[in-house]
Length: 416
Image 1 (cartoon, rainbow, N blue to C red):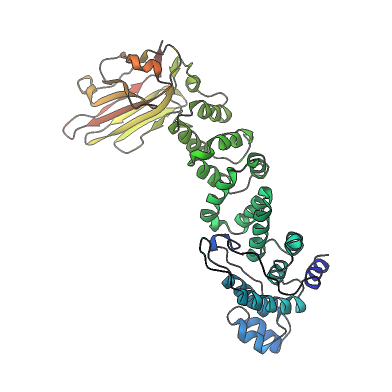
Image 2 (spheres, rainbow, N blue to C red):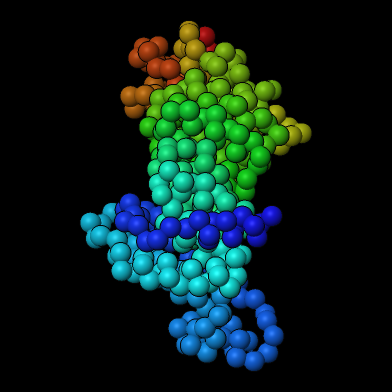
């Protein structure tokens, strides 16, 4: 069936026509076509095939009927004819004409020469070009030249689903192109109807799902669609916690607390009620910062939780300092401050640690205090009543001539 299809494309191929601009046909100039060399019998033909990759012109001289050599030349001429993306340089009609000639010879001797069929398919009339490229695509999905032609036809017809399928195929066979392809995918997400299309593709768990979502999270202009997309993906997908952390962090930075909480609840249905502003205490869970805690973990400065102990263990050695723990907290109605209980020692060095609460929406400090005897009560300023989300940070620093500060801190209580 594939052979009949390829032959049909070749036999119905018209003479050289004036083509539309091929600018953008090759994906960001990064797609490199890789042809396969078939092994034939001995003699001049075999010699021509061996040389097809390294010296295709010489190969055609040794064996004029070498499909592989002719295909390689056609591929090289086709790529050389295309203007670099973003330039005003015209497409070279002379090189395209030569590429077509070599493609005709390659297809004559081997109807399954995929790249040759790709060249010929792009010479079809505009109204028949997509059908011709799809017919050639039956032969193989690994041809970069063919995928480039298919990508251009889908782009020309405005078929987002088609473009995404081609990019998905390209990433499967050439994952190294992800840095060039991901920005294009984010642009596709901006198009109307894109969420459904992306949802269908991502529900099949492609390997690039996390790289794409992390890239999309960094673009605030697609926040609405990215949240909708993440919401429709089931929890059994291959999306990592790291990806969800990036998504939530980006949403919080953009002031979209409700959306970040929505993602958190999707990933952790049994998670901390602090994301909704209704918590009475803050557990030391650290699965999904920033709506969970983020801890320091260094040799001389660490904060560690345990599944067997609700309290947080901290330690700061002489000569070390920095942030021990931080998280974001939704401030619901009536939140007036925090209550903190600890057993840190030595008591005369407690001021080496401090707690600070900052409003994320306007940067104002709601409360700040060095550690002191337990329990500690931090009263928020009046401005805290108008702050929807705050950042809590515990810092510690012990000078080199000081003493190690260590102990535990109980889950922080919310004062209403």
